[in-house]
Image (cartoon, rainbow, N blue to C red; front, side, top):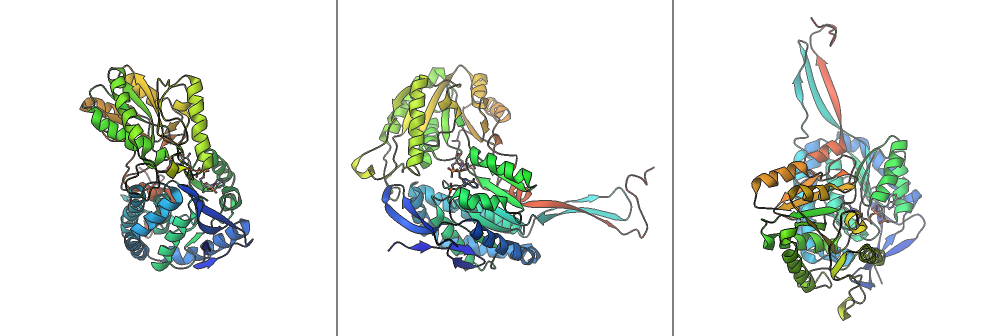
Length: 495
Ligand code: NDP
């Protein structure tokens, strides 16, 4: 009998009010059902938000260092359960086990880092313009935070949102992606074992329109933190704006690696392989465009095609597998549609371009690693997010043109440049309109101690992780303490 998993509300595991459930399957073998999960609706969301609202005062009154101590316990439990978490994640999401271990490690790093903020949460003290007056700023929690998360980083992204939100004194309700609820159930178990008081964090599983939308709309939700597609993000932005809620959005990308004619091509190849085909191209920071100097374009493209053909596809639990499946059949159809669009637009398909159907692959959502050359910047495959193992190669005449091509995008998440010229590298850092830039490294591989997020259509100006996350999940209060014993008037008592 397939195991049934419940919602986590007010410290208890409870069934959905409708009694409906949905099944979670393995994308490497769609016949393998991993669990039955609650198909939540507005009633369940109401209960979860009520629990978070009730816990608000108790949690904000809990000294931040004490909140931090609980988060250290969460981090220790993540370490202890790392392998089991990674195995479950590969089963429900498909990416290879080395990458799911990395996903858990990111949550561990973030949790240790943010737990330390419990003893900092630094504000400012500044001089007052008046005598005998003290001026400072302190951080305040926002209240109840709703976290809506995608499936591609099933524990890293929930940790980016929940841990800083809780450290800042907020309570939370999370709605994980319908394709990866098991990992967030596992995360809730860890919060419970770490002794987080009831109601501080709550989880409802289910579908976006049924459970996500009522959560965003709920009048007692003060802030929404969302990662996912631009389309869903735009809807959330409009709901939040109408209700005067705060919201932070992390959405799509169309990331590029520039390869100059002086680049170490072997090193650049490693970067493109990891960025283009890691996580089966389903990272928001995936390298989907290679902008390469025409002097080395042919040589590099041959090297890339040769390596792409050698990638071993299969179940990500097998340590020898390089690339797992796509998340579901809809995602695979979408990738294939873009390949057809690319061919019609006149791009040259060099390898891949179809479903991967070997014997061991036939029950999974596998797609061949695909490389297009002769891609022009106006083509849809150079502009729109494909979210699959498809790399487009665009040739350029020099550095300035390369930068223009990269910047000719409605997104602005990640970029990279391979060059031996330090002046050019610094110029690229200055000119590339993205939230992340790498030099002689791939577009993926951010570390949690620096801000993460993008410009233009990728986000709305907020950043996650690092100290920047505190800005996203807290509000400033400015405090003035007058110890002069008399009425002093700022700006007016001015001579
Ligand atoms: P979606 O936007 O479809 O889903 C993201 C989350 O939103 C899921 O939990 C989803 O639920 C939920 N959701 C869907 N509709 C609504 C709604 N109307 N109201 C509230 N919540 C809703 O994105 P995907 O899960 O398909 O993720 C892939 C996309 O996310 C890609 O475009 C990718 O670039 C982007 N992404 C961006 C990242 C970044 O940091 N910039 C990181 C990771 C992904 P359900 O699962 O049930 O549909």
